[in-house]
Length: 415
Image (cartoon, rainbow, N blue to C red; front, side, top):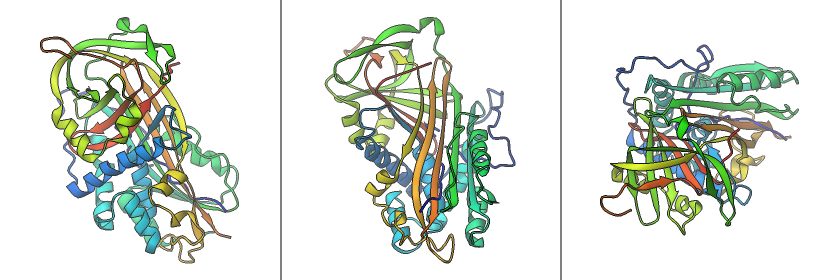
């Protein structure tokens, strides 16, 4: 029995909803004096999204399949896709999803209002940054879907809604939507549509931001990167000495690299010698993230950051089950808000991601698919922040503290 897709795309910063009627990737405006748009969402909801971001990433990195590998995902894209799904869930199924996304103390109304705010306001936050968020619902046109569910998807999630015969050629239609809403960075999210597939819930997030202060390409050099386990490799290391928001602690150092008008930024976390990036991220949570933000201070820093490019796919059933979302994957799932007969369940949750970091800035995208199937240093010195060993990157928006993308780079590759 197969599936209902929810496609998520941050972030790093960046995951964003984008209406089908609009251009899939908005063109950044050129006015450097444009006023930043503060994004106002209720603190309990903002906190729940941040808590979920770290909980999700920690659970994923502890999966043996991904433990020692590069990992770049969008917590925001996943949260939004699951937010779409939970609107159609009831009973234990709904309670488990709400708990998994750290929203058990929130109302559905408050959650939906926050998604709508993020969808509408994140793309406008910084005219120098391209940010697009889009949602879509694709369903078999012979399958009965509740009108109230579709209305919520349209009104709260700005979702494109399409009923299709679910013939083989419809795979191309759905994949084209993913490509159009990620600037052609994620071109394939589906290979086939099975006879048991009745719906795909999808979120796409696209982010493109130039560094506020770009790296000089002439300073990019071949340098050694120390892989976990003791071996080394040569990477293209970007180098820059400048004033950055910086923190140095007992376990790790952190550096913030802003984009555009500085409303979005990449926070790089570099473990100290003798520490691993996994142990650092395992201990990160909402409180430590906020503490880090308040501990950053301007300092002259010698920075080295390797260029890298990633294209990945993550099957997230096990991750979500480990976070407590159990019943939705079983044939007894309570999804009557989607279809009254209720004989449907989530066959899989997956996320496709793309990330590229170079001297100009960062481009990142994510598509989350939820498939629903029918049952049948010293004072005075200039500190060095050289990422010559595995490190983490978190892309976020400042005023809402929303994390769009989160990753750990174990083995930088750039081609």
